[in-house]
Image (cartoon, rainbow, N blue to C red):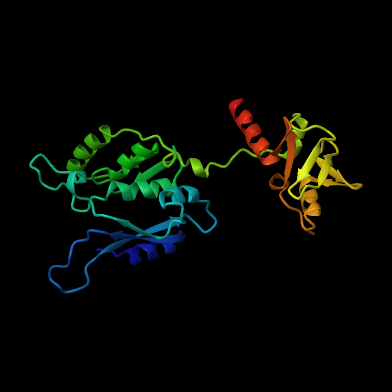
Length: 268
């Protein structure tokens, strides 16, 4: 039997780049009854990309949602597959000795793939990966030589429903469409000579359609103006510093940008 270290070494020799190793800590691991060695309470998962230069998916914010708002660590605690989750044959016997828990496979898919991505498992077994893919709206290709596993696995897939939610859709990791200040000015979200109020109360005026602001005879970009009015030598993100008046109340231009984004997305 090959160890995970041998597999990792082969991957490196083939040019793969190991991003992380992940420890699956088994909360209900099986004791070593012979007492001849330490019991195997964990398994190692290798997360790798095809090369060091290859792009890879990591749904970082989704991971935080799965971990009570904290950064996801590389140690995951899940119980070994048991009870009703464990597939059995028509005689009630355990179908597969190493069936993986669906929660573990779903976490891998939720963190490292996007909806509609293709997931390939060359050792399909009882199709746990396929079930997780169907739940999370990923495409899948499974390879399995054992006809019995395939038979029961297909039944399992057919009885699985898609679960639509923010975790499976990786909603938190969807990048908002890029919207420039100049674009918003060009679409009359802001008006020439409109006052832009800095957090410290100082006011600059919108000078032109390029999105430049003017203050005390200085006309610079909005981001440069944010730094200038903050008494900083570097530019700052103006969307975080300026507000404008709407219906007599100050509204953050970042809030107006989010509203504009929604309009653009709705018109696509």
